[in-house]
Length: 183
Image (tube, rainbow, N blue to C red):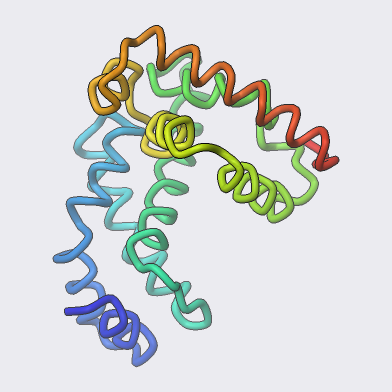
């Protein structure tokens, strides 16, 4: 079934939309959740919440790319669960490192005046990057892959990946300051 057909099922409020989404994007969404949470059970819970989130968001939202839409929902739910888990027990997981790395650029997220403004600025920033640093940045901070796994995928050393990420974070910080995005 095509994405357009699945989206149409959501708009018709046909419960088959959830099953079709699960069949087509279940593995994709589980991998996103697992990369963030490192727990099969928590990942399954987040993916199940993704289908409910999609059901509640469509209509009125009509995504251009269903995979990105569902992936965003999964990622947001997973990051929220991770934050909850790590606030309950400080230092509760390796994945918190991803968020800490970005805090130097975008803050902790609880003081952002306008999340939409930040999202738009991040989109513009990513569009300005060359393909290789953009890929490395996305693998690390969107898919939350380890430095080692990112290096394997990009066929680079871990040191090269760390340096690329450091430079990209510095560029992001300068970009946000230049764009006058308040964080």
